[in-house]
Figure (cartoon, rainbow, N blue to C red):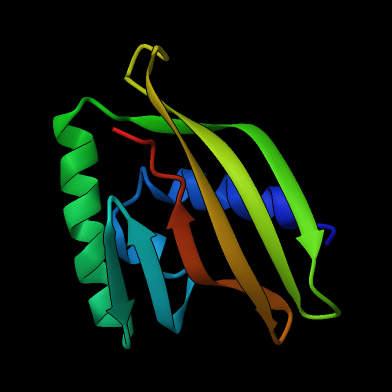
Length: 125
């Protein structure tokens, strides 16, 4: 599982570079589950379209950068892992705007990890 923290630091940084950069961390097809909604993205274009909406929402809320607060990794064998990460979403001054926790199922394709499933830990209303 070495390199997983670096993978997610780069993934977090991709949110400063736009939807195409974010989508590059995902396998196709992939699934995202958040806020009571499950989305299947069969192609890279679908993944980019989804993250264009996420990016617009985050920026409207003042987001400029993310930071990993904690990461828990669990190996699922030679080529797969689950990582649970709590993120802090920060404004341009570095102030935390909100925090969210996600779990990611990753699979190693060649030498690279790719996200197959992203699940937001939704909070009860």
